[in-house]
Amino acid sequence: MSADDIIHQRTRLRIMAVLNTLERREALEFTQLKAMIEATDGNLGAHLDTLARAGYVDIEKLFVGRRPQTRIRATTAGRRAFRGHIAFLRKIIDQAQAPQRRK
Image (cartoon, rainbow, N blue to C red; front, side, top):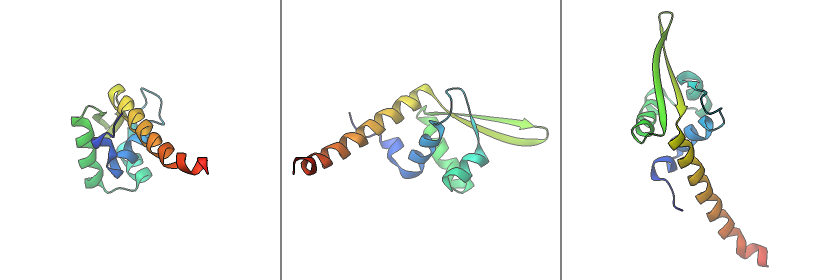
């Protein structure tokens, strides 16, 4: 078990944490995600590109009426990677707390 260098970055970790709270097929609109993680358009877009290239998110661009809408959802691979990364972080925390428990 090791850290996932793609997810480890703070903004991408936030993105994946939010997306992993959704149902498997559920997507979140770009502006909602942006507000939830407190990112700028450009920053969020760049991190989503990185996650999409890794196969961790699907990005769907469509029009609702005449307005563009971008929807993002975590892929199965992205959910698996997120769970693995969280397990790695928990292991580090458990190891750090182990000596304190013995006292």
